[in-house]
Amino acid sequence: MVKKVLILFFFLSCWQSFANSILIPMDETQTNHLKAYGIAYQTLRSDTELDWLLNYRGGSFLFDYSSTLEKECLIRGVSFEVISTANVQAILKEISNPDVNMEVVRLFKAAKIAVYSPIKVSLSSFEDTDAVLLVLKYAEIPYEIIYDEEIIRGDLAKYDWLHLHHEDFTGQFGRNMRRMSALDMKAQEDIAQRLKYTKISSLKLDVAKMIKMFCMGGGYLFAMCSGAETLDIALSAEGIDIVSSRFDGDNVDADAQSKLDFNKTFAFENFHLYLNDGEGYGSMSFSDINVWSGRFDDEQSGYFNLFDFSAKWDVIPAMLAQNHEHLIREFMGQTSAFNKRTVKSNVLVMGEGNESHRYIYGELGLGQWVFYGGHDPEGRRGFHRMPTDLNLFPHSPGYRLILNNVLFPSAKKKKRKT
Image 1 (cartoon, one colour):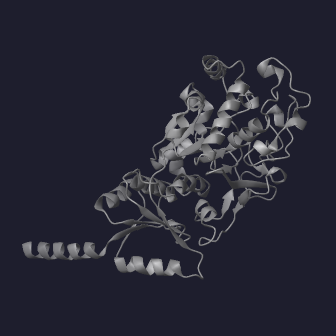
Image 2 (cartoon, rainbow, N blue to C red):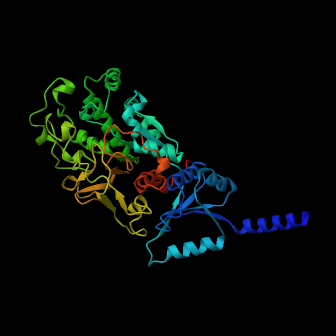
Image 3 (cartoon, helix red, strand yellow):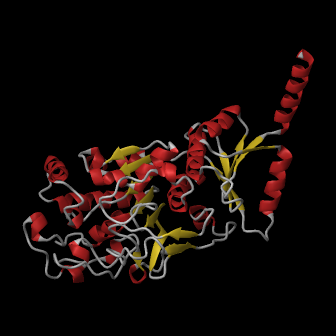
């Protein structure tokens, strides 16, 4: 018996000596796509590098072998394969073939993540459905919540990655009373008072400008839903009153539309603001940037298409579009999708529907940004829904796009301090 155990131990030792890597496949064989990103992030956070195999089996991850990593995959229910050096070399040879649309990207260090959310200062129960907060928690990726006061005092410099979601940078409390309770609105008014602002719109404009400076300085900005739309609206309307009297007590500038400066925006231009209470869907739309507000009919059956990029020549969009599916189910939000007519010509479109752009990328100064239309990739019709239980959607291609963005900054090698 002892002899058999020793022989088994010998063979296991020999097998592990040749099993030098762990492959986490991201194709249809993966048991939990979303938690696989958490494994990758945790590895980077431990100062261990890994490879992202673009377009190889759905955008798989390749790690140096460790028993700790193997156990973590088992605990989180993530499929993995222990492979030999020979297997690795065969995979890399296949990827290096100039005739195949694949590439190896080395990931170096986990990005430090900040999420801009009013839950920092008030109940804001609607923010419980923030898709990024949901998926970061599910994937077990750590983050910090910040809000206006942290941004105004310059705390963005501490982070590499910033998320904006169902926010309103125009100072109109989301243009509807479903978004915020009286207590939520008072919490924002209290911040403005502490920071010596007479109007919420003035505070939010300064926050928007500092977010823009964060991106220009090399930060990565990921925005969804109304956060993307209202950020650009606020920047374009600097020095112009676009807030109706029901929110700030004075009237809108009659010439506001003609005074907008689209040179100050990230992604959008030539858009028309909904300045009067009767404009837009139920007075809840900000502008015609959003082309899908209030339309629910296609949400269950409609899809938008992810474009296929060259992994060897267009590495950035290829990383951001990694997926096991290329048709993503439509999902709505206060800003559901982006009017093609309003998107600047220098913006890269990575995903679009029949009538709109859904997933777009751009560069600003030293930084980069992505805007993703809609509120929750697995959400359903209505504004009072419960938070999505991602245990029911571990393979969500719509949520995978969010997590691609979380890992994307890790491809930029950090400069060593000397």
